[in-house]
Image 1: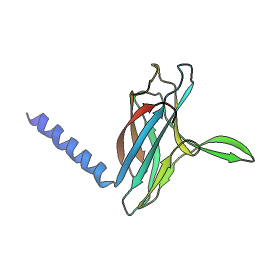
Image 2 (image 1 turned 180 degrees about the vertical axis):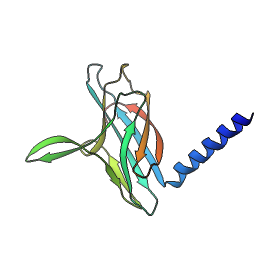
Image 3 (image 1 turned 30 degrees about the vertical axis):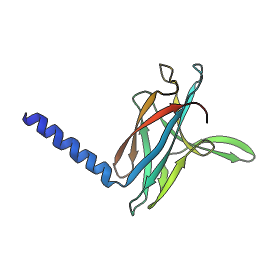
Image 4 (image 1 turned 90 degrees about the vertical axis):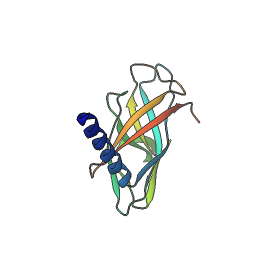
Length: 141
């Protein structure tokens, strides 16, 4: 019983740390891709209601070997995807991860993901906060 209460207390304090971070993630989704696709992309809106900038530095998912931060942009007239070491989420602001801009890139998972499936992500910020996100797999909008 003692262990149960300790685990409950630790999980509650962990939840409060996330709640206190001021980070809220909305409309998280992964684009459904054909079974032969080598990479998948994920999108979401990250809102920061705190008075301090937050910097997204890492994303992990148990369904993928790794997750990369990317940004699509046109450089010298050529559209490219550029790796990002971090993504700034400004104080009292938001950043939108969407097609043609910031997004997450993941190598194709072992099992094919279809519309309606879900993908779990852990977003890690430079200050040590972690935010759990569940994204729905959707067909191309």
